[in-house]
Amino acid sequence: MSAPVLEITGVTKSFGDRPVLDGIDLAVDEHQAVALIGASGSGKSTLLRCIDLLVEIDDGDIFLDGEVITDPSVDPVAVRRRLGFVFQAFNLFPHMTALENVVLGAVRAQKVGRPEAGERGRDLLQRFGLAGREDDRPDQLSGGQQQRVALARAFAGRPRALLLDEVTSALDPELVGEVLEVVRDLKQEGVTMIIATHEMSFAREVADTVAFLDQGRIVERDTPDRVLDDPQQPETRQFLRRLLEAGRV
Image (cartoon, rainbow, N blue to C red):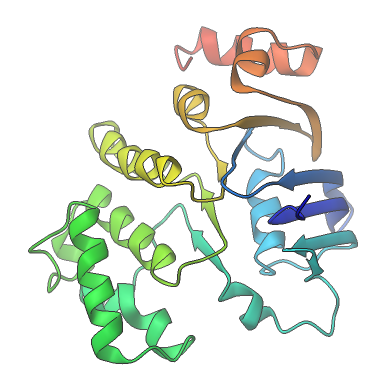
């Protein structure tokens, strides 16, 4: 069998005296989508940032296509070229157009010719429902449109995996659906993804595996139906009960 696209083994991370990740083990196979759920501060975003080498781990290993990427000798920029990261707050360059934001990484980091990158960027913007908005700057776009530009930018480099960090949390409720629809389409195409989300219905629909994090540990991991409908661990049951009481499940 081929190696998982991403494999995390025994990863720990502390900020000062505060442990944030406590022995994380997780594997993501080709074409799989893994949803990370858990309360704020449970370690979901930190784990994604460790995978993208934006945060240095304290112990353990992270593998991409069977190659360890957390060795100090590894070039983090080269690793990030193989991953696509979409942040909560879009992180678009405000002085650039939508198209310029999408093609920047391909032109600068991957040395793709500008005409080729531009053609692919236009295709992606059209595919993500942004045809005709190529020349708009971020302040001319809604939050949902900006996040779709960010998704197009992350996907433009044909990454081995997409890392999505609460991509709907900064959006008004009426804009959430348009972003989730893009992610659904990517899943149907077999894109490998790790998704940190508070949207339980979305995790149920898109993920092959749901991993519940609590205090930096993966407490429970199984199919969406098993974790969300029949959780085995008391921490998972308590978390889902709180969401149900808040009307979020």
